[in-house]
Image (cartoon, rainbow, N blue to C red):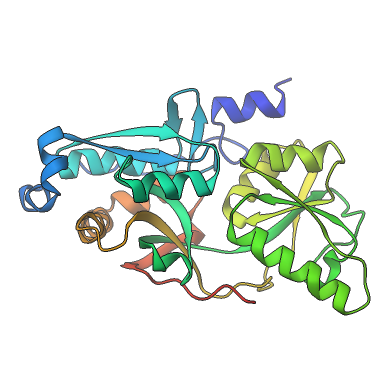
Length: 293
């Protein structure tokens, strides 16, 4: 029997693997989009997209190789823009944003949560709508179904992410209401956060619904989702690619994603990875809302 870790490394998707779909159309370079790329990118003939480790089913990182929906979409962008896109991994979201803003990496395709506070330093090319829920042991022994029921429990989150900020704010609210605080456990990657729940070091993992659905499907019946259909501290949650504030690359990526939508590539890839409920009808720049205080 395959272990949970081996399934992750193999990139197995949603119970039976990537869903068979109609083939994506052939993609040819769009000269007009290529010509709008920053001069440094055209000269180099490549861009580097940075990630902060596995975020399945979008990004499944094994060594220096990445698969998943984001990998498939950036492969399509390579062909459309006429430049190579390389992938590099850093430890944690803060390091990712620092790398993008310093110019070491041209962008992060993500998807990464778009919030007004983050838009102060970055522009987001949003191509996903997401929801935040809990992954718990099957049977939900701690009865965690919403933020209000998280008081006195141990919750794992991604370090530096929006879910971390929301659950810490909820912990303060628990204390103010005379309840026990939330013990927040912050990890740099998704697999570590999930394994904390599986090993009973945490009671739940609070994160985006799409990757949690993936992890639950790979957990051999040991995990389940809760809090589905609740706002859980978020509203109109959008995620997307990240570029430095004011970068000329942002509008190019937006129009490239729109082209992948128009020719059907976006829908084929999203459905292949079980992400049809996360598709955006219209991508945009800086669509994000405000993180609740």
